[in-house]
Image 1: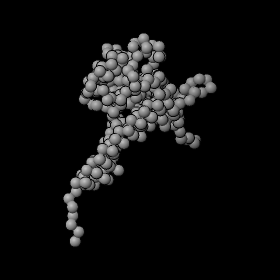
Image 2 (image 1 turned 180 degrees about the vertical axis):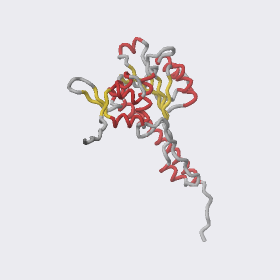
Image 3 (image 1 turned 135 degrees about the horizontal axis):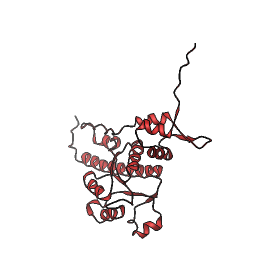
Image 4 (image 1 turned 45 degrees about the horizontal axis):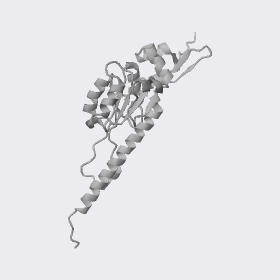
Length: 235
């Protein structure tokens, strides 16, 4: 009697995916809808999720590598042109733990490999802002305790936090936001579901601007060093 080798399925149901990932069924559904898990629907309307996307998610690192230290012997002009990028820090302010986890996984998969920290409400976010000084804050508006509206007003009236870059991601429409007094000028408001492509574009622009400023400062240091080099007598 011939024995046939059993070939594992290349796809799972949403419930099977949730069990493999150790998350709730709702979380697995949310990840599939957001594109974090590759999925499609059968003719009968049942969702199927690829095993490769599940395995990729299981192997997603939870920490980010810090760039290697620059050799102190490198010449100042080389530092200005070839300095490694500094870690890019993002603070996510969101009260829904499922969405916080989604943010962490998606943002850490970006090429810039940002360091992602989260807070569950505006009060916790203000504490983390003082300690972390992030490059970008992604904030919700509807949260228990101190909501996003109060948090943003506090940030804008605090001189030590005035330079923080912020983008709002909210399920509220423009009319609802206006009823709460609106958000401070200069803060973009993006709609939910979370537009990760637009957030990535904002983060990359912010990172490019920071790197450009860093190179400009390094170039100024190089000019100062060159102008103050001691003269060397030629033989």
